[in-house]
Image (cartoon, rainbow over all chains, first blue to last red; front, top):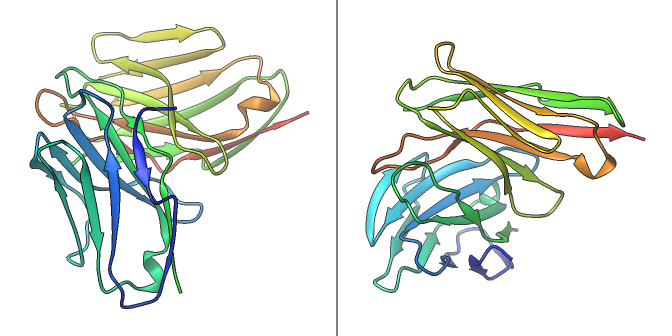
Amino acid sequence: DSGVTQTPKHLITATGQRVTLRCSPRSGDLSVYWYQQSLDQGLQFLIQYYNGEERAKGNILERFSAQQFPDLHSELNLSSLELGDSALYFCASSSNAGYGTEAFFGQGTRLTVV
Amino acid sequence: GENVEQHPSTLSVQEGDSAVIKCTYSDSASNYFPWYKQELGKRPQLIIDIRSNVGEKKDQRIAVTLNKTAKHFSLHITETQPEDSAVYFCAASVTFGNEKLTFGTGTRLTIIP
């Protein structure tokens, strides 16, 4: 168990719908990262939050948005869903101590858009 | 931004032989290089990492080497075992305020019994 909790584990929804993925980081970790992993693909960085503020942005679609709340949990909102959005979405957290720290991954949310 | 290239994309080795996976990065400011192992259907997990002030690091059968001049780092697995079969990802990050990990595209390692 990495200490990073993602809910739900699985999500099936229809095209055009909106979903929210939730991530609770490890206790004490200030940084949260979101990654998208399509079938047999690598880990595509979407966005990073640090202590409530957006820190870095990757190839995140305009239909996607995220936020980190005061209690440090984070939510990734995906709207106007398309078939191609079907993927495994990982959240990771790190302490961001400033000199390279391990990122711990949650078990992922598998999103299927039908 | 940072770009990490990883080779090969697939690798099959006989059990007991060694496996080597190579990565190159583009941002000379990157100073942290972790390697993650992802078993089928599971989350990526850190197996070893190296920082820019070190040229080599070893942990039992796993070792990582870093050549900062060439912007190149490699994962070496010796005496491979069936449980080493997985997808391996290299990554690079610039620290001190922005620890976004940029991952390579992954290497699917298959150990042949």
